[in-house]
Image 1 (cartoon, rainbow, N blue to C red):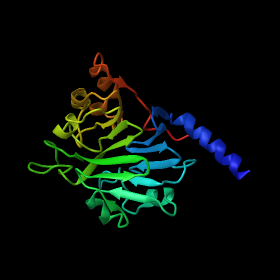
Image 2 (image 1 turned 45 degrees about the vertical axis):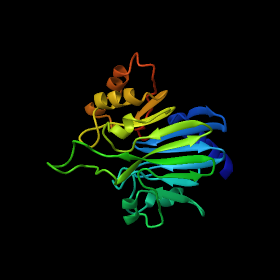
Image 3 (image 1 turned 120 degrees about the vertical axis):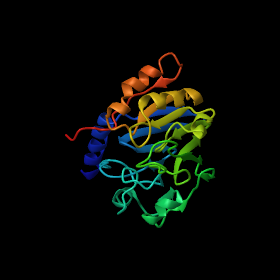
Amino acid sequence: MAGVLMTLVGALYAQTRPMQNFDTSAGQVKITPIYHATLLIQAGGKNIYVDPAKPASFTGLPPADLILVTDIHGDHVDQDQSSIKTISKPGTEIWAPAAVQKFVTTATVISNGETKKWDKWTVEAIPMYNMTRGPEAGKYFHDKGRGNGYVLTYGGKRFYISGDTEGIPEMKALKSIDVAFVCMNLPYTMPAEEAADAVKAFHPKVVIPYHYRGQPSGDVNVFKQKLEGSGIEVRLLDWYPKAS
């Protein structure tokens, strides 16, 4: 009975959060939006979570084999590790920038410019930072070097997760990205127009806006409109499901 119940819960979850499927030479990669900056990547029987943090719900979802954290802010990691504890099992690995170890002492550090192998994946840590925006003059919401974006490669396909960033040179210089998850919202990252301009520079095959909170500065329809005619496929997903 418990197994049937979990199957039903999982099916309901899949209906409310549409899974994205991408074919690779090593098999299919499945990506599920969970909430805001939190997502689940599945391939080869392994489960990778990115930025598990409240108020994301993990009901009906499998335990993590690998957890990637981008930054120290509460929408990316819980200081009490509650979300990480919810999805962890014996053997779960956690990779994060050094600043995250303040909250997650068991995390393995991966820093900007570093590349690691995990299972059939290659994980590259990419800079994410503010160039112009901060709480006051001379300070930034995200300092260069503190947090990571990630490029994950599996079966020849490259998946980019921006983390909290502006349209930085390192993003614009990315090559051969198949699927990109790009943030937008002010004042912390960038508006939809700037995000679209940055995406045009590195021209992924598919782009999925996330981390936008439904604010005017994160208007995903404006983002999509700005990319019309670029040849880039824009997929708009529901990152903020309403409680049933």
